[in-house]
Length: 288
Ligand SMILES: NC(=O)c1ccc[n+]([C@@H]2O[C@H](COP(=O)([O-])OP(=O)(O)OC[C@H]3O[C@@H](n4cnc5c(N)ncnc54)[C@H](OP(=O)(O)O)[C@@H]3O)[C@@H](O)[C@H]2O)c1
Image (cartoon, rainbow, N blue to C red):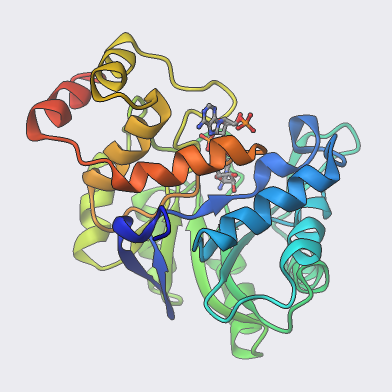
């Protein structure tokens, strides 16, 4: 039995995916810029994920740039029928590796074509519009013009489903008035819970919520409560953090990132971890 059988599945637009997926950002070089130190190891992580029934991979052509998508293509193409690759557009990389907004119609169209070429596909499964009004946090601003560009590319058959990333509830409402929004990808984890109300609202609307930095991202989660609970349960703190997200709401899809096969296996095994109401309440106390 695969590690992730128990995490069950959820609707992601036109697809149904296992709730435990994989985020490919960590496969590029340091700072998500340039090639990985060990290309063979990166390819192995991707193949191991799919061999363990991961059927939801998150990526972007601005990881590397281009490199993460090229690794996915090399490792997994031709893709399994049930594999859903979610990418994002709206940013580009400066020559120094900085993250720069790329929100013009020309840049968005170019980004869709870059993703198609580097992933080796004719149609992108899901494209998230990554908002860059503030690179670090959701910030108000109209996304109408940008979504109109993506909706037109969708009508032309280049994009199947559309999602949003780094967005506010107002932007989600604006987006849903333009096209169907199948997922929202924002910063959220056990210790960073600004989107609690939004997650519940999206669950009612049957829209997937995909937390990025589920393990803390570049500053891995650290909490004595988390460590104590993990040692009591005989698992790792990262497994508890992922299991907490799976328990948090059924519309949460996980995309933990790793460049290590050992960590990948550990993360997928979190699907087996059942947390009691007492433990959940202790974990909920981390932010209250
Ligand atoms: N929409 C957006 O703006 C946005 C922003 C950031 C990320 N994302 C997406 O979200 C995905 C997840 O975020 P993320 O990868 O940045 O952060 P993350 O999943 O929160 O954490 C990844 C970090 O945790 C480490 N790690 C993973 N599993 C571990 C384990 N079992 N034990 C110890 N350390 C572990 C990884 O190092 P090792 O490589 O050593 O395992 C890496 O440094 C990304 O891959 C990307 O696809 C989206």
